[in-house]
Image (cartoon, rainbow, N blue to C red):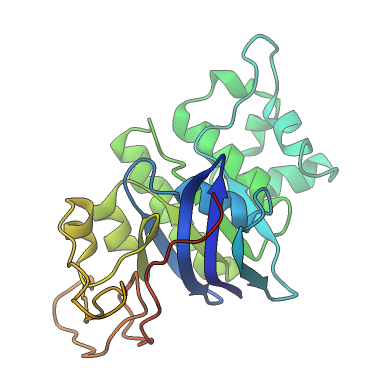
Length: 264
């Protein structure tokens, strides 16, 4: 559905993304991890059209429509705003349709009249997810949406997302620092730190344990199979696309890892 090819991004004279390539396929649940400053949000903003790539391309299938759930949905706490008004920022549908949207995220219609600011963090995130769904997306992009949400609520929302994916046939890109949960929930994990890295398990990547590029490869990342299935009884024995670590056994070809774009 979405193909990113050799994407590089420079902002204010700094290389933010360098030669990033990957594909989001229809119905996938893909995780994106990386340290602070890795370029995760910049990549999301590029997919949303908020940043123009310095080089490379982002190609979307005609049916792609992206719904976006940010880390924090910022509304002035000075002015009360109802859940109904939050949803109406994305749609002009009547209340019965808004109530159905809330039911999709496991909130009842009584929430329509409640003050958004008085809801719990988990309830607010459910409303924001419903707001994204109001646009009838084919792809949902989450940019660390569970920051500051308690553990039990996080688990409920992860379950909610898995159900939405199954019922609605959505493609999901989920950006997070919570590597264990991403590994458990997602089909594939993209490991980003300015460029995509491969040759390590995502948990090792999060700890900074990276396989160095072999001498004479021109900076291309080491490509070898990485497994993080929900259990350890699968072995696809195939190389993965650079920076992508898969649960589902699909194999891909290694792509060029890094270069220094002339953009600064």
